[in-house]
Amino acid sequence: MGGEEGGYEAPPTCALLDVLLKNRHDTGAVNQVWPGLYLSNARVAKDKALLQDLGVTHIVNAAHGTGRVDTGPGYYGDTGVVYLGVEADDRKDFDISVFFTETAEFIHSALSQKGVVLVHCARGISRSAALVVSFLMLRRDLSLMEALQTL
Image 1 (cartoon, one colour):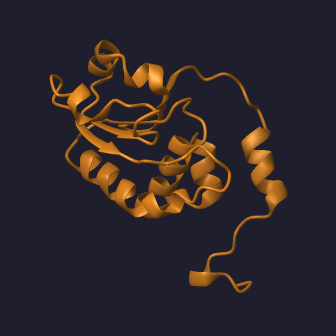
Image 2 (cartoon, helix red, strand yellow):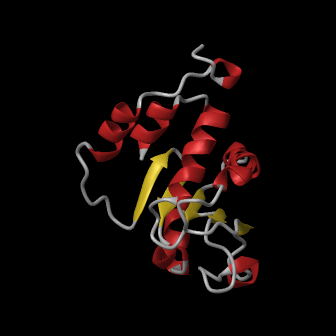
Image 3 (cartoon, helix red, strand yellow):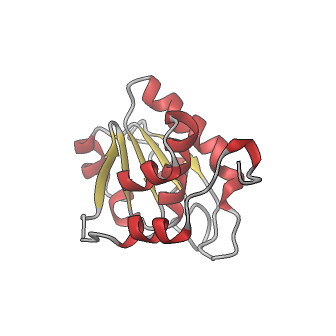
């Protein structure tokens, strides 16, 4: 199919832009994008009371590390939250795809156990969204367009 690996043909750029830019509005600091799966920013990730209210059992920090959103498993030690830190730089040239499989498996495992997952980065826009989209494509068999429309 169009020379694409694995028989998948990427949608045209104009279609992607249409999905990403059409009907944009402020959705708030935390959004449930799939049953049991939330996308948010660092402020929400640091609010333990809110995490408890949401029922969060697992956290993926796509901005893990010193100088980023430096929470780590110790920060959540008193909550019982299971933590996965992804050291992803917030740069256009950073290849976040190396984390897609590990993160998708972490989210899938949590949801399979009836857990609630919060995926975040500093602003909840690019790194965390990329990881959520990859999960939806890899483990829920959504197309790129379908996955983007959930955000």
